[in-house]
Image: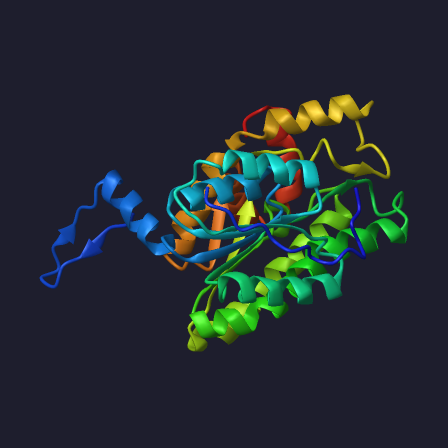
Length: 313
């Protein structure tokens, strides 16, 4: 459902691990429980803005951040999904939660939303740009309108949100977290528009991180592999991939490859953000595939095709 043209509605505010070295050079052993407390401390009482909060990684981040005592400004175009996220947050240990319908393809709405957030909750400390969509189909089979839609949401949505909230992050010395993808590290046939958008997000992230480092704002580029979300089920199709007979077969293939839960992905992301990492790769599959791409930049596609045919990833 599209909400382009709608303005951000008034939000509803309701109650509701790393190793280090000591000065002597002796390693400090940090237990898992201590690492959890360390990450929790980073986000406690911080205002975290999360787009795409109606499902998947966005919802998982919202729930995880709430459990750590963060204040939240959540948005999505999916009203029913947002209401479900709100319901799940009813027991959260925070009394500062704002929920808004927001289309990241609507530049004017984003400007209004950023102003509304700072007026109602204060300056954002962290902005998580999760909202995104995908389409399936080769470049030849896809109309330019499909390409433009993907870029408008996945790339320009990230740029618009980053621009609108940057003054707040500069004041708070906070963090900007933009979701790219494993497909922002590798090309994948049948996903030309999606890969282009996610490579663009990666380039934006890596350059912006350099520009903002001296100003005290961290930028984290997140690259999830197969994560169990609804993105494949919600994907529009310009053409079926080669060798796939119907949409059901496509969705089954994605579900089989989605080996990381959204909750596990959120935990990995938050741990990386707490450490101010510039790149966070989510999932064993993404780490392996990223390594293969770096080792074989010219021939990784053929090697990955063979590995996938052997069900070894």
